[in-house]
Length: 460
Ligand SMILES: *Cc1c(COP(=O)(O)O)cnc(C)c1O
Image (tube, rainbow, N blue to C red; front, side):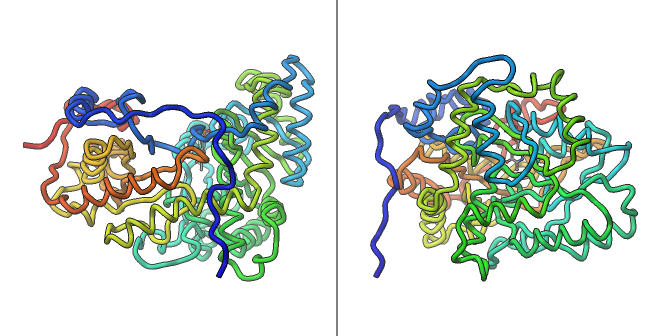
């Protein structure tokens, strides 16, 4: 029998958190318009809104901050970051950006050459889709159908449907396709990984038609871990080798460093060897992000990121990180709570259509469950369903999301497995009494990105 392992770190500094009484939680949620986004963070006990920029830095990262070189141009910290990122990716050109969407806004307009060009992806993240559209492109998703079957096990639910992808390229012609973006892991499909075989096959298709491949690398280290654990032939490869192979099948990447960079703010663009593209990105960078050797980051931020990138590739860290998400998922699964199975790398997605079949999609079943979980345990989840999806821009009709998820997003190195148990208790209690939950309707609905600021009220 193998020895049980705990978190591969001990805690040197603590940040107190506090569970306010139930009546205060009820009052707080009502004042927040039944929208957890509008809660104050100190009204929340365990915050599972996102894993983006919410991780804990290590003592090594905190001490690296002191080494930050704040020179406007040619900062030593920039060169340190460059060395680390080049070594991980094998790419010739690396430029910093203030976060993932900063990376997207300097890369995508240089890739989308003419209005109406398609950008194909497994499932584009919201800001990626927005930047594709701002640059005049059209975002199309080709995720395999298996992603929408939440109950049946599949090791790589983030995979592209390769047949559909190639068929589309043939139909629309390669010259109308700006690039293919492979999002690893696929955030919008529940943090589900993409297999190496699939990434490689995407590259082969792209090469056949002369199309550029980019990686949305926010969770590339977590994806590499899943490949090591689940894909034949990779069990003896290091996470670093696997990551390098992933990057080898692309021509560039955009990365939100707020995830696998293990920093609270930061991003990167990488370009394998296309000097012309690099020059174009650098030119756009100056007005958008900052001078090319800082790109919206402090020197100290670049130091912390250089350390974080290395730490996120450590097997023990990834095993504990993804193991913690699995631990929460397993507790819910064992108690009969329907979740996306297997669980993804950064979150447990609870299938609220199954928990609340009595609440119609336009009364937001997953939002009802999120709100109940806050009242029950002071835990803040986030809705990923019809409330988030919004309305059809042309008809104004409420769109129905194929899946109504409550996402329990786990920050990196922040909570212990004891917190996971408390979360599981609250969710299980809510699911047991779900037939009593009611849906929500709008009191105030903003025109765009409504889920951030909308105010709701319970349906009578
Ligand atoms: C978070 C994220 C982004 C955007 O990054 P920000 O740092 O939030 O701007 C892009 N793609 C994916 C897959 C993400 O998860």
